Image (cartoon, rainbow, N blue to C red; front, side):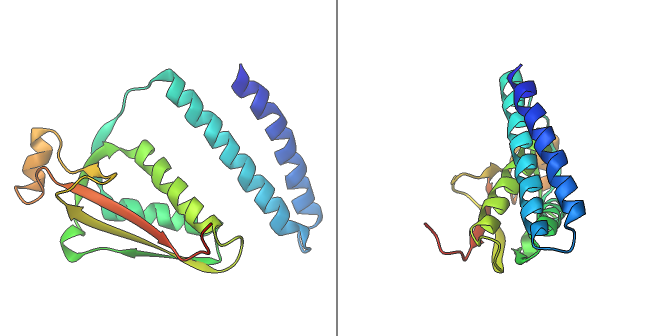
Length: 174
């Protein structure tokens, strides 16, 4: 299918970029080859996401401890964008917060937002701050309610509330 038609040339480009990276490992070409390889990974991920969308797979909602989850994503994205300082601001009452969501879908969304924020610096140093807050208002948020057993674990405090995950970069904008 179309995924195969896209992935074959990408694999070839990736192999050539990796060969260039090995050949010019100490030179100016290394950041360029890394950029090519990272962009190939992004296109491959888009192909995978498109296939997942077409398949209409079931959403696998499970409890997620949000703080370690976010910290793990930030750590992974930070490895790719070494010049960017990623920070996370968590209110004390959110440290042990759990949400019910599809781990893979939420990870993809947050990774995409963090990557977009990091890329606004165009390879220069910068800072990206991730902030979370619990609110009673819906604003592109993850709802903090779920099955009865999850509500009991959350207690009355967070029942029928929302989690806002905000990402702020200090780039030049458009």
